[in-house]
Length: 461
Image (cartoon, rainbow, N blue to C red):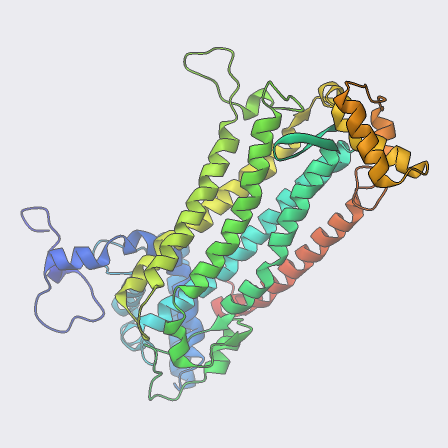
């Protein structure tokens, strides 16, 4: 450190510096928050290097030494001894210089045949495979919690709304299952995004390959990738697109959870009351002792907005750039990680909260009286032989004159709606089948690459 507390540029370990001093302010400006962000990539960087070895034409004895060194690096990172410090520029320099200090030529030679450009893309894809499958599993847990809620409360009726006006009878079961199916639709759409993540970029270097012999397909297999990005130039041209695709998928999950949250906020308000927040899921007011506030659901909506903001940031960063690598790409990591973190938080909280929501059966049923049963009366007359439009106009005229419609019990309302997916026939088994199938897909995808990485790591975490 200098006497003014600034880090001397010469104390930094940079993979690209060969001679001369680097301006300390410039270095701080270009590194920015990369050290903090790269901390979550250390394990993936080391595993990527173990896979990288499979593509290099090195002697078997030398390969064994390199594997031993990299496995030691994995163990050191797991024990907290290999970290990114202020002296490092990024995750790649932290790992390379750690190897060089302890294993000499291994650290000096590990970068052969690659660039930090394809190295960081590899780190991110290894990280993203794990992250999106984790989010997928969480989304299925939330959908499962909603499906179970629907099953428990299938006979609890309350109003349904269009245009934020009472429309027709609905139920707690119908409401919860609709949200479950929305999450399942989003979860199942991960497949296309995952196929893009599941391609190895190694061997593309800075976007133009290298003149060294390199077995790109062998590296892809070693790292458990399903394939590779065939064009070495496409890897850098695609920077930002994959991040945007992941964040768009996260934003859709956020959309699902924000809609669910808004419903909970509305339906648990005193003017509605179909849902009841238990004390442990509510916060209070510093001035009004009677308040029970739905903060966790409001902050779920806010987190969903942050995910959309992260997506917008990524799209803006990649807009209008020419082909090839640009340092702008460094700033893709912060919104990507932020969006994934926010989505993880939302799904975890909602999975915990949904089973604890309470319902007020009496208030829900009491709200199903008067005009909201108008459509039921129209169809009762239609079933008795009156043409639909005549029945519609007759009921409308009667309501205009102040007529009272026949009351219906919750059981009668449910019994009249036996169509598949209706209040009286929720088709819960279809949702359960989708959840099981999605979990099987998740498990198969994870087992394929986890097995490959475990073989590279030799059992080391």
